[in-house]
Length: 131
Image (cartoon, rainbow, N blue to C red; front, top):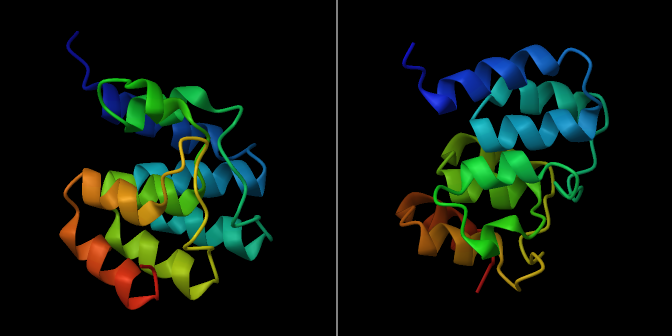
């Protein structure tokens, strides 16, 4: 069978979300573009600043190519910004996500969005006060 890895990953993450804690749900939803999962996680009290430190696989797969800098732990906002999920970036900002947080490589969500060419997200983050 020829499976599309991202679809397989999304199916796996969606089924795993039933037992995932809210922080994990938030990170999975932000990285995969699943706004329902993000909303559910926020309703359950997920920490907006939690990082995917123990979820290197998600970060590795979301950042195609597996560059070293992709393995630095990221917040949900960084994952959504890097993956181009505009609607999730907006939702996280509305809930007070820290736009100035940086990963272990010193990159913010804005820098990640710029690097990946997500102009809409760059505009949204700048409008939110990021310089």
